[in-house]
Image (cartoon, rainbow, N blue to C red; front, side, top):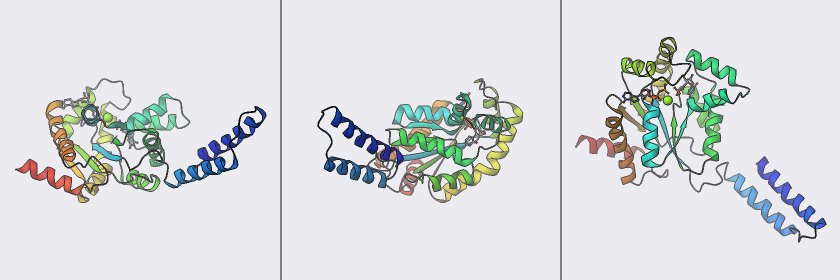
Length: 263
Ligand SMILES: Nc1ncnc2c1ncn2[C@@H]1O[C@H](COP(=O)(O)OP(=O)(O)OP(=O)(O)O)[C@@H](O)[C@H]1O
Ligand SMILES: Nc1ccn([C@@H]2O[C@H](COP(=O)(O)O)[C@@H](O)[C@H]2O)c(=O)n1
Ligand SMILES: [Mg+2]
């Protein structure tokens, strides 16, 4: 809203300036029209450039279960934008933001960053993107993350679907310890803490979406391509039902996917 007010003031200023520059000024009617348009846009919410709410997919799973790897393949094949909560937080650290030191400590400990902060980072990315399909990877990690997102985000507060990469702990630990990307949390002590937090805090969120009929549980053992063939079926069945469009209710998609995979 304040950005719009600023734009309006700038229009008025340029109108005044044009008087002194002998350029035909914006007249009162033009200014009123501009004001009315800006107010209407604000009333629609912050996603003013979208006709309809975006299609939101939450991507969940334990540390090293392969969320990021599969997200890259979904982006290539189905045109989603990938927002990794962990990557957004790491970006805050490397940009020396005011919260950088606190985020770094929290990640090193394998703990969860305050929800308001993570939600703000995700919201900023969604709102500034032209895409209408998002993978939100590694979020919500806790019930508190989920509730904060629902409270803060006005459009698309509910995910359309939730993917859960289900992987045995032993395999997750093996993958994390051989990831080799220089992450401060890829060590045995932090992984243990992350697994504890996953079981205590993230599983309740996964159960919540399962009860809502939004959860797709994907066995995450096998080659990357084998796992992606499972993921592909989900998005293809949503495309067949024209459901990669947020107006449709998702439980039909989950039922369809379950039926087609049982038959
Ligand atoms: N199916 C697979 N088989 C073996 N290794 C895999 C498989 N999928 C991903 N990996 C590897 O395992 C490591 C972890 O994968 P990835 O980063 O995608 O997991 P993640 O769920 O995003 O983890 P985190 O929550 O820690 O970010 C990476 O080194 C990746 O290359
Ligand atoms: N919703 C979230 C997501 C992540 N974090 C912190 O970042 C770490 C790395 O996350 P990845 O998804 O890249 O594994 C994670 O262990 C948390 O410390 C968070 O706080 N909240
Ligand atoms: Mg990841």
